[in-house]
Length: 335
Ligand code: TRP
Image (tube, rainbow, N blue to C red; front, top):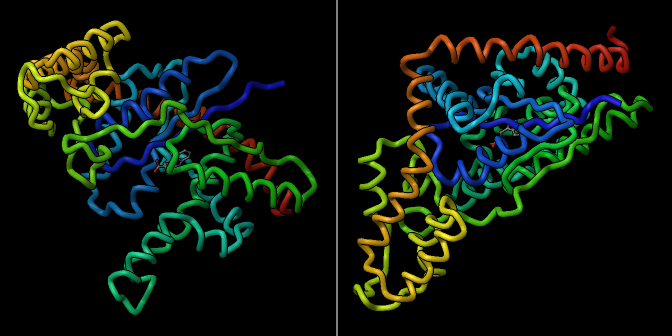
């Protein structure tokens, strides 16, 4: 029996932040160390193209994601790392899967539905205004990413679960049509700690709220951002509720359990916000300074290494993709 495949992709849309780190990057790095699995991790650059039409940014953001993964502990010796756009088999499969994807299923995909709803709210007469076909068929390309590599497990955030279910449905339609197991049926692996990570203003940390803490910000910026975290007006000496505090919440994500216990007691004993923030900065910087250095080295001084790593993943991914495509082409009758 061959090893089970774990696969995940990240869309390159800008510098990753602490919410991405805790919710997606770290769990995927941890999983990549799992024994008895084969891991495929890729940069979903053609998915980003649905919204990002600036060539420099697309290229830079893609490199940033690769560097981020490696800086945070992904081992390119253990994981096949590649750019989606380097794997032509993905796009061949994408068309074939489109022919097995009910249009109604795409109508119900959440990103498309959200765009339609927004148009509705804005009183647009054309409910599809601003929606390109890339947005509409996004789940099909994603199914191709997953099914091409025969992925069994797909670690993703909660917002992507529907996409994995679509991939699974489409795989089943195909397998049933041709009465054979061409595709492995994929399943989402959701990080159980999937708690919402609060941003600087206390709302969910998200690029669209501009309340993020970028993972690789310089130490001085990190300190400034921490100083901006919203707090209530309790004064030094007045007890503070740790559970209601963004400062405490973020601290807990990066500190050890015993540090967190001590910090909780300090809150109850009335630690000053200034001191609490200083301590948060300390643990954040401790966690991020090593990765930050590696990240900048990969992006700036050591560009060749990054390029080499990304190109080494390609033949490995394509070999698996080609094997799947042979089965697919045979099944549909175009071999
Ligand atoms: N849609 C995912 C996101 O926005 C990225 C992605 C593309 C992906 N293809 C994938 C994730 C395949 C897992 C598997 O985060």
